[in-house]
Image 1 (cartoon, rainbow, N blue to C red):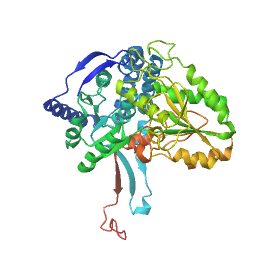
Image 2 (cartoon, one colour):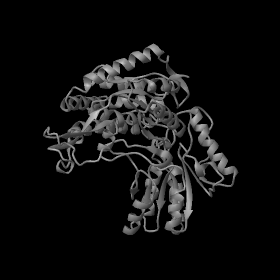
Image 3 (tube, one colour):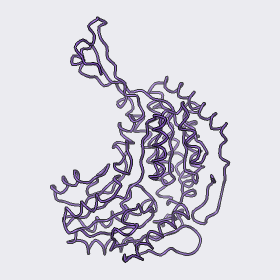
Image 4 (cartoon, rainbow, N blue to C red):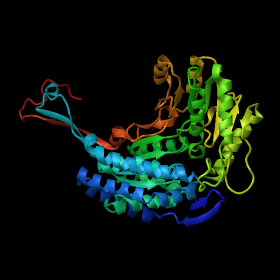
Length: 470
């Protein structure tokens, strides 16, 4: 197992790290547990000041942080800058709204024979976060900001190809004022996760990653009776109906498929187009995809940078080759370029059928599958005909269709006439094999809280009389 920064533009290894020893891991967990005992005793106002300071630091250091992310995983510099800004926004959101989200919720005291009854939200302790490389700052921040504001502490096991970003996050929260150990980066491989999550001081885990990784975390957590939140990727549908603005849909589809060099769980991946507008959409979409500029992600004129790893690029190419060998048609792209770096061109593939890998698998690169549907019902059948259920898109100006899509699409989110994205204000997560639990909004904060019932009576011997036990 190698923990290293490797530039995906040229494959050059820039910096390597030794994995932490068992003793170092134990020491880190101990510091994080001690920090929890301190942090849970601080006020929401104090934690809010620290998180606001973190936001200010992110904004002040945006360009430096962005260049580091681009160097480690290849996203365009413009996208990296936007990611830093989004993280600052999330910090401010939770600093401003935590008091509201964590406020005691009154219940009907009379109905439960109490003088007072309410729900109180309290932290549960150190939480292990196992995070991927594709949004190396944002994936972590959407967990860390609400967890720290709730009074929890965090242990970060980040992807092994973004170690410098991982260490930057630990340093960010420390410099912002949070207690030493409140957020700790563990430079370890996946083989250490069982040991860490099995430690009784670690109370829960959150993971964004593959189905395999999610099943592994869930198995360990189930054995140890610990809470988990899992976001396991998706193969999001992008449905275009006859009433849609086809040109606008094609424009947004191009961004939706190629954002982050095509390496996004909520990127639209399967484009399901009604037959009445299929030809117009296919032509506009393929034209826009082929016009994207592929190149050095540090160049402001670049639209699509390299994939994060050689293995990832080879997997995408293998999925396309499998489809072509079985009769698929490539409208643009589809050829792995020679030369340095792990680049892959924006690609549109059609004439797909269930025997192809692209039909069932998530494609983690700038490759779109294009499907034809003869009716609304067929579009829904295609959209839901996947083991995933993270995000979804529907393009229609028909109000009745909009209502039907909102109900019928099997996903954690439905975006109508717009591109799927994540906001601090809205819950984020999936169904089916895309995982369970929610990040962001009040829901994300409450995932790692003890939702405690508080019942207060007058102290009379009749307290609870007439109620059924349990």
